[in-house]
Length: 310
Image 1 (tube, rainbow, N blue to C red):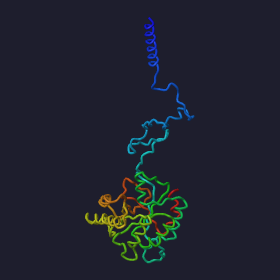
Image 2: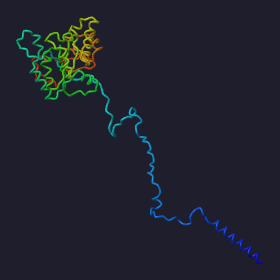
Image 3: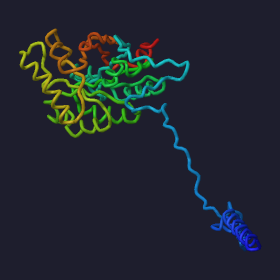
Image 4: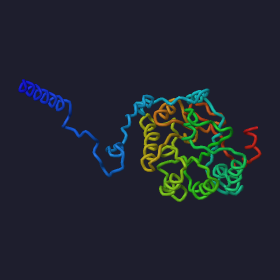
């Protein structure tokens, strides 16, 4: 009997020990490890920069500069498209010689074509004082096309034949006042004598911003020429001036003002404008190759000029 109880006791002890061992996790310590580091667990974890969410694309941006359309500010309309003009009140003043010629000079024609430098200065001073704008034929083309506003008061200064006194007398005065002239050149007369401007003098005009116009090759009566001769006089003079001075030539001046329908037709093939000697101050842009002019006689003074805008 005693042996039986001894066996039961041993079995109980063994079963209790197995239960104890099975109820414990010997892979981990039963108490937290001790340490001398006072930092918290958060302090011990590695730090990383915050991850930012990617920005969403700007769908309002223009896809391409060439496709973007500029809209006017609210309440503001788009500017109107340029409107070509059909006419303009704009006197074209015709000069020949800018020179003092005595009243008793034996050559009446020469005397009648001369305008004194003193009167010319007075004219330029009047324009400067009263706001009369002095234009070129290039600006006239822009006005006709509607890309340049028509000034309230304006003139064009047009110098026929290419005389040397245009360079020695008119050119310095124009430069002094900051105005530009239009010099109508007979190409075969350039440098022919001291009476006409040289190639270098004309180059000085162009370099200073003045405009050249064709006055043909030889200054003939265009109405008496054959078709081939007419084309040479008008076309070759324009091409020579344009190539020699690297400047556009958009205006022709008819020698002695002579023209007919055939001359106008040929002129229209090479030039934007053609100026006559017919009197007038209003330019009809529907017939741009028969523009009128105002002849400046030796006695033409401010008293008559002031009436042009009354």
